[in-house]
Amino acid sequence: MAAGFTLGEMEVDVIFKDIKNIHLSVYPPAGKVRVAAPLRMNLDTIRVFTISKLDWIKKQQRKFLEQDRETPREYLERESHDLWGKRYLMNIVEQDVAPRVELEHHRIVLFIRPGTDERKRQEVVDGWYRNQLRIAAHPLISKWEQRLEVRIARLFIRKMKTRWGSCNPSSKSIRLNTDLAKKPKVCLEYIVVHELAHLIEPNHGTKFVELMDHFLPKWRLYREQLNRLPVSHEEWMY
Image (cartoon, rainbow, N blue to C red):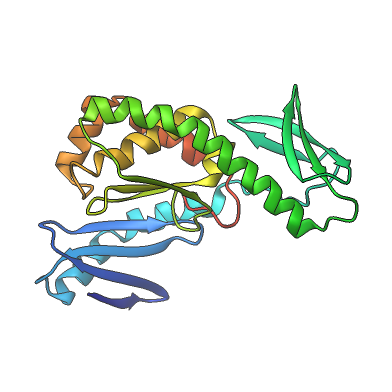
């Protein structure tokens, strides 16, 4: 069940869930505020709680507004693109063959047919990023499935406008944001552990934090590293 209220010009979304404690979140890029609250909690109580956290909310919103944004890509010759936290220059090769992307030393080479437009170029590059992420994610998932003693049923990799990853404990599936392939691999590992831990503890409460502290003691450092990196206009931080 969902509800909401406003505090001045600030809109607050409220989601009622089967949880014991209230959780406040502020999401990039614009600093959207959301509260997850126990099913029977009074809306006035939630409003008072949110007001008490206004200083923290505004601090988070300022951080998001100050974060660097990537320049929109046009998929042109010598344009820069990232892979696993390293920057590469793109070379365009026009040939009458099936489109593909290859990594050659310090270059990302995009093979396309003559006259291919920007939208199609982006589709080819996005497909390559998805494949890179899938290849890197599978051994990490296997590693952490064993350590956490869990097992996923399905892995989805796709562009996500709202987060770096997600987990559906009931279906035992996880989703990873394609753009993780642009970030250092340690960031991918942090997200993998985060999502697999949700198979044990669905919420972000004390038990979840204890799991992360035990299995990945430096997870806060990795999260901070991920959130310091430039993001596209569609990405949230996690």
